[in-house]
Image: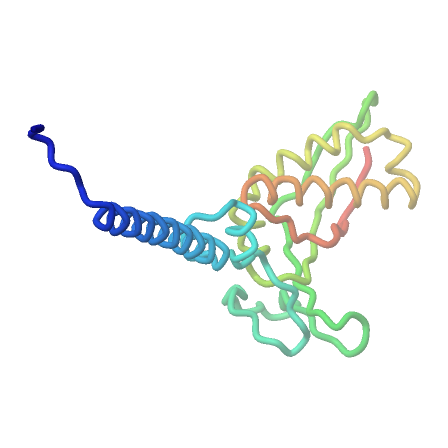
Length: 200
């Protein structure tokens, strides 16, 4: 006689079915868990990729301001007697309000490969909200430096023709937007204007 007891065939079938049911249950739970996790990732509630996070993130850059619309970022300044306000709202033209920023001091620089000097006074405009004006003031030192680099790289012949001055305005606009983009992540300056322009 052997000490081993044999399991009757009916009990072996029950154990086999129980094991199969447990295995199927485990697969279903894993699938549901994976599917649920996938759904939560797609909804942006957990994990996810940078692309999904960027798509969900609200863009926080200065917005275009329509004429008559309130600008929550507008600087709170009063115009002095005889001085035009920073915001200009008129009839016709663009549907957006234009705001101007006046640089506090003149710019004086030598010209490229020349003994001539240029002295200019600048203003710039934006149709974006007041954050651009705040950034211009905040980063004026860095902007001044970049403008002086552009002026020093300007050939003398460019400062005598209207076309050359227009090219210089475009280069100055690009220089200002470059500084603002590097420091604040967004440019926003539409154009640069000469308030005075002197070549010696």
